Length: 403
Image 1 (cartoon, helix red, strand yellow):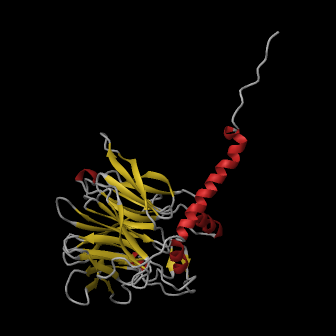
Image 2 (cartoon, rainbow, N blue to C red; image 1 turned 180 degrees about the horizontal axis):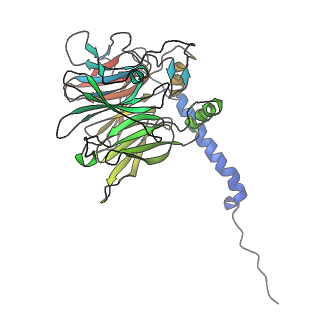
Image 3 (cartoon, rainbow, N blue to C red; image 1 turned 60 degrees about the horizontal axis):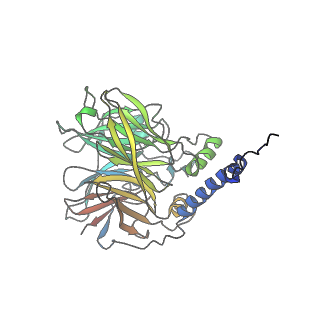
């Protein structure tokens, strides 16, 4: 008589019918954790290192300056400001414009923040060789400054989130008399929601024709609010859909290729020719990648590590081995404020990540919002011992002494 044996018992933990419940549960718990973190429920924001800070203000249209770059000329910043941003913001889906309301264009400003004179010298830069159409629909967002390693020529790269045409990346020659001379507009189907830029400085990464550098850029969202359906999908994308990305414009071939996929609200970029840092805003993390050039010249990215911050991270800047991170410690308060759901200004925060040595992060500055709110960019000027901060829905700049 042959003895039959029953199949070995399977632990119910591995049974597929239970995983159908377990996996969605894990996802919902992770989503709930992210939402609670964005609310900042357990994060009390008090002023920190604000004693030496001064708010630099200027003309009425020197306002809502999302990003800036520091020049190699001591104490000079070039700042991109868009005075209509409080009423119309494509990234954050804000539109409070009245029918037929005139829409002023944005501008680039030169600010000498290190001078002893008060008030600081603030100068709106004149644009030349630019079409009336481009100027009328110029709304700057992310910025980067290229200084050619051999010629010293300065080119300002500006993300233009135009209201009435496709987004673009505008290139301006920065002349010796601080005039912006328009060189070219870059548009491409893969440049559909550009936010931040990181330029590759080495000659090996440049066009052999005109010296234009290759660069990485972030697309902050996949969906754009062109109708009700895409409006809803973009709102869902903010928290659930990992559809944003980072792409590379290769100036040597004039081609665009995707570099990183599957990000949640990709935002600020910074780094060197060897390393790229990427901010994921609502995940509150900054990722680090190694930039790899193959023997054939192809540029790819290898993921290295990531760190988490107690704020929704926005723009990034790189300063001598340190990543300077600006953001929003109370993200939902920030969202409610820019959507006019309450009047209290949200706080600002700046932290640093010592990515190249200790790997540690530390808080540098925190404002409860009374002096300077909605911080989006920050960087150190170590020569003049200054920290400069800009704000999305704020007037002017914040300049602090670094002790």
